[in-house]
Image 1 (cartoon, rainbow, N blue to C red):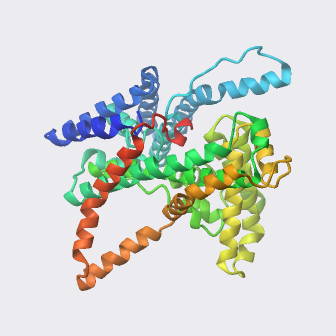
Image 2: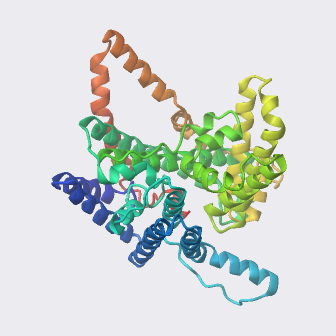
Image 3: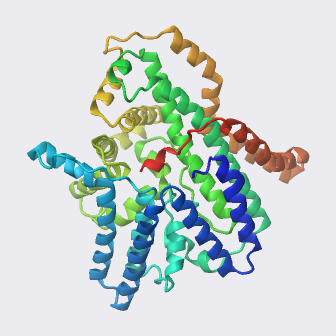
Length: 475
């Protein structure tokens, strides 16, 4: 079940909210959320529910033992090692065996191991919990079912944002929902739903027209202009898709009194790769910063050690996204530009108009998404060559021209949706209304009508669209 399915929007979520608000006290409300979350998770594969229960139990008992034995590092290591064993087996074991097979020819066959949904996200959440207990940042939770609730909350269990326990610790046991937060949560959910159902899915259709991942010969014949349009569409899709999921998760949390941190801050307006990664998937970037980069020494032990620390972080960042060499290459690709910025480029950018650094950032990110898109190195190479007509492909064609013209205004609006322009306009209208009470009815109609209009438009977009999973479900 996905947030952008009709089943979720018109059955699961309304029933969940109805049961939640009919519950008499917070304990009952938490039970409603736990049961709903376990049903939601089991919908995608009941057999993996036991894995989630086990991982939550390991972190729960591990945290208690860490505290009992005076913040024992031994129990910290044991807890993290056990959780990492699970994710390594389910996510990377086949990848490791393939590498061994290439080197020594053994084993002869590689077992197919299905990837449990959301394992990358809830594993990191549970690791952050035991580490924070060890550091003394939070007290261990005595009740297992509340740790399970934290890990399994269906808002963010499957594809983030990666919520840390200390951010919602107080709200698990003491929270209230105001009418204003309920309204803002509904609006945030509807904005995210429209962003996914209309914009991200529309960009996906354009990208899939040109970026033929399963047919290298056909990909090599795609005109250069088609590849440029396809990569641009994919670049828009992956942001709109993932930020839409985060918007919906944050909105649903707000409906019941949980305040999750923002996961995206308009990364495509960044003025450097360093700035881009402060804005993209913030919960993941901050996780690696706080639990890997800083403990390794960060930038406190000289430039050589800092570069080594960055290498470790970006190798792991790439590997986190998938058990494939293209993801590792993608992580190291950004590592190279981050190092260049730290030792040289950022100083150069300060002496130039900001437009140059912004264009540079978009170009680097654009080519980075090609590495991310194609799991085969052949696909990456064919696409990169094809962008410059080096496959013997043509510059353009009638089909590419018609596709681009037919989707021009859609692409322009998708680009606008990746910027804070609409938010700035809304903020200006609010200020005019607050200061001089201008256009009050427009403000009121906007606040009331926007969620309804977006919900209807999303419904129309979803009807008949049988395939619209979120991209980050595979990670």
